[in-house]
Length: 276
Image (cartoon, rainbow, N blue to C red; front, top):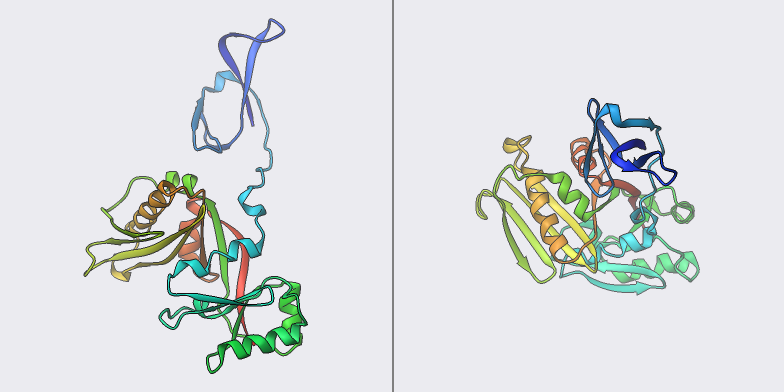
């Protein structure tokens, strides 16, 4: 928070007028503060009266529950069919080779005895592997392990950001991106549909923009292509009315975490799979 003089104006008591600027200080001499809306405010040092560090305001987006956040996953792929076991969501899609599309979302109390719920999940998947998608470290995860459910890996962080703010942070595109849309889904490619060096997918569900399958050819990395692809998907999502942008990223993917952090994405929770 920086308090500064307002030249040429008088305060309510007849003395100098002051105003406060709240945001991230990114430069000094002159002082540059970036506000929560993305505005850059430049303040000459001779106008600064005082300043102090204050903790960031908690994001309204981060107050969403794990269940609300994860409820948008099934909508990423149009071929995913869902049924329920109590309050759990059973997701199945033979045409999508993703565990998120072929696992049971179990982040709330199922509303029936836990052992019976696990048995029902196994029955729902028949001959397919029965996987439970759970929040890491949650009471439910602990209870399921006590019943004999075993870890199946796949730890990933759920990252969340304001769509408009992430779009502003993405900046100018490093390469032209080709966007293809169909209803609530969009795909982006850089370098041509048949010879793409970067590509990604996104889906709008209400005001939530889910981004997934972002890939860059290893030979073309560190050229800003992932950021350009993300910018195209974010711009489309914002045009569709999305205010939240989210995605899953593997916990060990350091480069991806750095990219998303630079766009304002923050970790909301962490997920893993258990074998039922």
